[in-house]
Image (cartoon, rainbow, N blue to C red; front, side, top):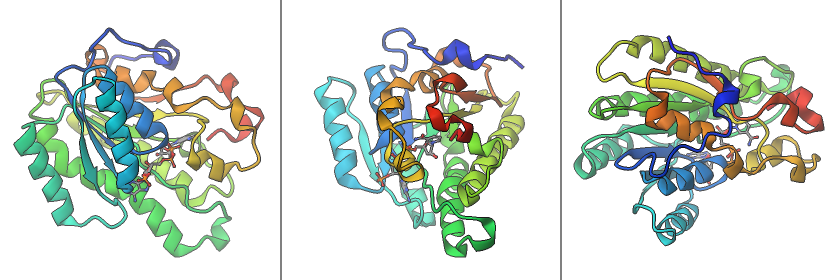
Length: 268
Ligand SMILES: NC(=O)c1ccc[n+]([C@@H]2O[C@H](COP(=O)([O-])OP(=O)(O)OC[C@H]3O[C@@H](n4cnc5c(N)ncnc54)[C@H](OP(=O)(O)O)[C@@H]3O)[C@@H](O)[C@H]2O)c1
């Protein structure tokens, strides 16, 4: 297996039009990290499929991409908490008829739930977080795998977290869902190793990033010290483009530990 260090790809830029002719679906593309990744992929020539709950947000991203002269994206309104079999099938059918394949799948949508001890954790919130963060990416992957296997150089990227690698008090379902995400990535990467075409499967931990989810987790921290979403897109571009050929089953960090603010002991 080829190994790449996080530091080698943290500031990855890639050549111009790195992702031209690639179709990349990004979940949670209307805000935060997903928005930045979608805009960066489009700027590198990808046709991006913007999946999310809130259509006005997706439309804003759509306009920004079109106004920048990048390939025209598509919008897929989908609530991953509520989506049923027919919604997933409609997505597969639309992708198949419009593009005939899928080159990249970025599982980015996620929710924090509540921060509370396990002994008091609300069961409904637990199920909701596990569903949006872990089960929905599993279902989406299962449905889209045949279309990914029609592409020449397909790549799946999962989004993890520091608390998905080392458990921390009060992170409850969010942390456990991210442990599950790392596990799903490893199981899938192992299953797909050596298949043709080789679908690579990897995880990214964005580190502390200035987004709504981060504000909810750390309402008192100094937001100006956090990196903005568009400053951490390098590893996503790397994993979606041809330079990461044969890189699979790995977990990457977007930021060195030292760049975390004072709260870094609670890396998220
Ligand atoms: N920010 C950080 O410091 C940090 C650190 C480590 C890991 N992460 C991970 O990075 C990913 C992105 O987080 P973020 O910080 O960018 O969060 P964010 O700004 O809150 O954005 C979350 C995105 O997920 C989407 N989403 C949430 N629930 C959804 C649902 N039921 N169906 C469809 N889409 C849904 C939202 O869509 P709508 O806008 O349509 O609601 C939004 O676009 C998450 O997986 C998170 O766990 C973030």
